[in-house]
Image 1 (spheres, rainbow, N blue to C red):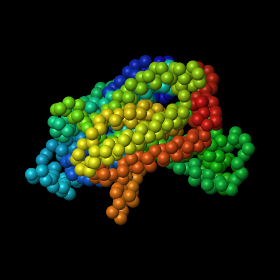
Image 2 (image 1 turned 180 degrees about the vertical axis):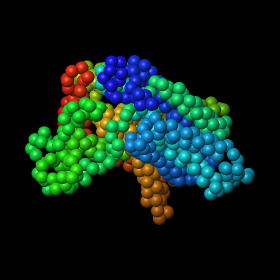
Image 3 (image 1 turned 90 degrees about the vertical axis):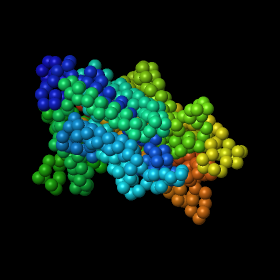
Length: 584
């Protein structure tokens, strides 16, 4: 790969041949991937944004059931990428995993469009009285939804990492370009979400659900076609380990076997290949760190009882440490993901109770207010990338402006502000309800839906910091051969956040509604206490900030040794163990 003109990171074309750096990769290749992402997000959010309303108005489910079912489906969409990433990293690679999964995704969208279009697959209504959905109607509907979830499981973790693969870390210019990649990647995602929350939601409620789902289905088909047009320009990373997950599991097992052995005082006495081995194999050597030192026993050379197999290398041990560290950070992202889950569930139901009239003949769909989340993201991303990063880069010397964990911290704080605003607005809504003696669930509260606007905007700004930051953090900090699997920390965090919200909504409803009490989240939101639930979310969000600060203070960033091709100059990320450290 050292021949002049070829990529230096060992990437190849689809047939496994070395490729020229000048004719492949970079934004030339990513433009096709970004196009796919915009259309795919339009399809996903076209379904998710208004799903709670479809369940309540078309399938006639109650509020708690509809919120729980939306959260369970959304959680599945974000959890299935674990399987897709594992298949990609361990067996067939990102490109082919994406290829198969995208076809399953399209099948699910086609099936969903068919289900919502045929009258026989929807409950019938007579004189304004609607029957509950039959078992077969529910089965077909959820079959289509979970087919989409399975397809998304293979596309979501691989398309973003495949995009990041288009930049050569050994090339200083391309490495600089890569710093902005995740910002603009998410920008395209936000663009697709904006089209869904403004246009598709209106079409679904006013022109028909079949058309509202049919348009993103056609868009998804078009995006897959666009993706394959870019095939000649794509770079493909070669798998350097047959089973990276097996290597990962081997480390704690070996460390446990060696638990009675004494760790050497000097880490250089631990087992490790020499630099030439990594250089010739195209792998990267990882510096030893003091985090999770008990795992270092897996790399002890002397006194081992099992001499039939070699000890783990320091690089392998550090890979396991990275995963444990990422799990620590992942745990403190679950509460923020639970807050994010409100956008497509309780925020929407809350909006349906308010005055949505823009004119005597036009009412804004409650789910369309989610477009302001996206609009705030679209406005904030360019400002963050073009102004905030250069400003902070001059002050900190960090190529990203601030560290990845600092970026997450800022986002989490803004999110706490958002749920605080949501609580205050709901207190105001309940006050207006009492003043006007409103008790009927269908009676509109004389309060504009745009009172909800600040909480949507703040969550959008927060997402620029924590969503993009999380995606980049888990990609950047993953072991080299597990970057698809690493990004599933991002998706699974959102998934478990949805499941957690489903659990919380169900338990709060049961506990507060028992013995004839008034449920905080009842079918009649005009006679419930949603403000109490938002207050509860505010308290646990503040506590989570403390947990995040503790986890960040323990985390040590990955430090790789990169051999520069011209000569033997070494490049490594410096070590800084301070809380929310500035070096990464």
